Structures are given as C-alpha cells and as structure tokens.
Image (spheres, helix red, strand yellow):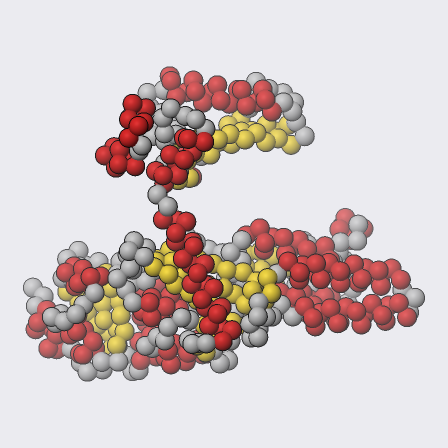
Length: 478
C-alpha cells in the first residue's frame, strides 16, 4: 500500500522529475523541480490550488520521481516523458497534426527539393512548418520550374537526358551537362529564397543577368529576368509586418470558460510567412505563463529550424532554463522575450486577437449553425446528416464518385466512401451522379446492416433548447 504522507517525507531535496500516477498505474502528470521535496509537497497541502490541480491531485494514487544532476537534465527528461506518455493533466499537442516541411538534402552532390512531413537527423535542411500544405507544394513547384533542379527521386547517371531537360525544366546533372558548382549556386539561391532573404537573391540574379547580357547570352539573360520577376511576385504575396527582426516566432494565447487557443506567427526576413493555431483542451484553469512554458517544451523539442527569438505575452518562470535548452539545440543563442511596448508588443496583441477570433468561431454552437442552414434552404427539419458527392474521371475513363459526410456540422472522415461507376461509359457527370445517388439510396433502404451508418442519436433536450419555439411541430427524431 502506497502511503502518500510517508513517501512525501522521503523526497530528496534535489532536482529531478516527479511522475504522478492514478490507481490504474497510468501516468497523469509529469513535472520537473529544482527541489523535489518542496515542489511535490505543494500539491498535497491545503492551499490555493486551481481547479485543474485539485482534480489532478484527486486522481493521484501514487507517485515516483527521478533525481537528476541539474535542472537542465530534468527539463529534457520531463519533455521526453510527456511526449512518450501524453499525461492527461499536462499541456499536450496532438501528434496527428503534422505539418509539411520543405527538405533539401544539402549533403548530396546534386540535391533535390521535396515536401516531407518526417523530420530526420540526416543533415538535410528543413524549412517550415507550412500550416497550409498547398503552400508548401506550390513553393516546391515554383522552385522546380524556375531553378531547373532535378525532379527525379533517385539520382543516377543515365544514357540520355529525360524529358524535363528537353522542355527546359532541368539542367540534366545526370548527363554531366551542369557542374557541381553551378548546380550548387542554384541550391544556394533556393535556400536564400526559403530563408526569406529575397533581396539578396534578387541582387545576385540581377548581377548574373547583367553578365549574361554583356556576354551576348541573351537566352540565359531572359531566363534570369523571368526568374527575377517570378520571385518578386512570390515576395509580394507575403504579408509584410513592421517587425524589424527577421527570425522570430510570436505566441499569443486567448482563453474563455470552455477552451484555450494558442496562435503562433512565423516571421522570417521581416515578413510573416505563416501561422498556426492549437486548441488546448482542459487547460482553462491553467495560468497563461504555464501554458506557454508547456507549449514551448513540446513544440520546439524536435523542430529543426529554431528562431532567434520567441516572443510571448507573459514572462514565464523557467525562462532562463528554456533559453539554455533551446540554445543548446540550435547551437546558437535563442531568447524568449515578453515585450511591454513597441512593435513587438503590438505583434503579440495581433496574435492574441487572432487566437480570440479563432476560438469564437470554433465555439459557435453547431446546432445554431445547422439551424441557420435549415432556414437558408427552407427545410422543414434540421439537416442532421449531409452527404455530398463528386464525380471524377481521367479523359472519360476510370470513372469514380466520392462521398463526403457531415453530421451535426462536423466532417466525419470515417464515413467517406468511394464508388466505382458501373453503368456509364464516357464523360457524363449527370448520369454518373444519377447512378451513384440511386445506389446510395437503394443500399440505405435494402440493407439492415447499413455500412454507411445511420445518424447517431443526439441529446434531444439540448436540441429543444436551441430550437425556435414556433417550429416545434417541425422537430422530429432522426
């Protein structure tokens, strides 16, 4: 039998990590401490604890601890244990939300540029993350078209150049038509572009363009001119901020009585190039500095391109320790700042405001949204379940239909289906749609074990409260 009071007396006055477990021996919280003795005892004393901590302590059946030589070691161990065990009462980021990066294998003689979601310790350069996967793919497509780098997955010498070379989209390094140094110039310019150093790359291209013109190589000069114009257009699409720093992340948090949203802006080359937001559940009772600290530990643990500065809205308790940890990973100085005035503080406010808007939009009740949908379409009943269909084909062949499903305003990916068109030959979308909808309805009527799943029952009393009293007769269970 684990006696908590007795074990508290045995705690050492040393730095380390403490692990709280419930009666099923499941880890529910992991924390670090300069003094395990003082820190762990605080949880079991009658003082002003938040509701979240009270709930956590109520679930603790026993605890254990690991002593470390210093607080820095405790921080690293804490991060690893949280990532591995995902305790209920820690700040958690969903593992299934992986963002794409652009990868350049700089160790290769003739590197390629690809989109990846896996970050490996392979010496390659990674740029990102891109919150919008389409933006990452668009950038890679632009790079391949304008810089004429190789597009084959595996590089090897060939007997003849591929089609990309003949249509002017590759320099054919496989045929030794371009030297390693010349190819490396292309890669260096791509890296500058992805780093946001567009002014440097434009100057370099302009210099090459002038040299080509002097040498009467007008074809090369025209190609460089087109590349310069394309880069300028890409640069114009990015949002310019008044931030004078060129490599920072800005974190803003907004919370209400239900949920917490964290917004993070990525500023590179004095431009905000992207943003992300995270919904952090069950943290409404946690203080903002604690949320920021927990987020930084998880988010930057395996991030390949750490910023020079992380700008946050409130000072955090373990700021110096986190700075040391981040600097060791980046092999350069990384700072955490909490500005109180000036341009950086205004940028933090912008992140907070965006987090607020995101949370308000998310918090809008789905029943209310579906009720608006019902009114717009003049329906007699609420559209609990919506199925949408789309037809796809390749030049009139390989005809298929896709079905997407929403229940109560939420997309249900597990209910999506694909149909092979059986009775239509050639490109005829209306007839294809007729077939697939007819098959869907027939299957629903005839099958007792409906593989598409009927709409799940819902809390009728809750729906009654959200409905218009004048529409009572139109309400029915589905």
